[in-house]
Length: 175
Image (cartoon, rainbow, N blue to C red):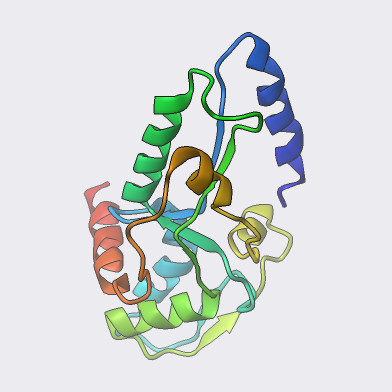
C-alpha cells in the first residue's frame, strides 16, 4: 500500500544539495470537514432512518493514525520555521495524534448520528485506497517531537466525534 512512498521520498531527499526539503507524513486528518472520512462515514449517514446493513470497505482490525487539522498546521509551521537547514540529517516527520481502531470509529459515528443498523466490514476488495485507509499504522512522532518540538494538542478523537461528524456533514452540504 505504501511501497511507492520510499522511492518518492528518496527522490525528494536526493535534491537536498539544491533545495531545502522536508517530508511531512500526517495521519488521517480530521476536523473542519475531512474528505478522507467519506469512505466510512457516508454509508453510515446514508443509513439514517432506513433499514439495511451498512457496508464498510475495510476490515475491522485496522487501526489508522489520526491527527487534527490544527495539529497538522502547527507541524507544518514547525518544519517551515526550520527548513533552512535545522531539520537534521533526516528531515522526515510523522504527525499523528493517536491510533484508533476502525470498528471503534464506525461505532462512535453510528452512535453520534443515531444509527443502529448492523455493520458489515467487507474489506478493501483490492482497492489500494481502501487498503491504505484501513492499515494498522506503524508511525512514531518521536522525530517531530525531538527535532521540531511538535506535539499533538488536540486528542480524544472518539470523545469528540459527534462534532467532527457534524463538520463533515456541513462540508459535504456546502459543496
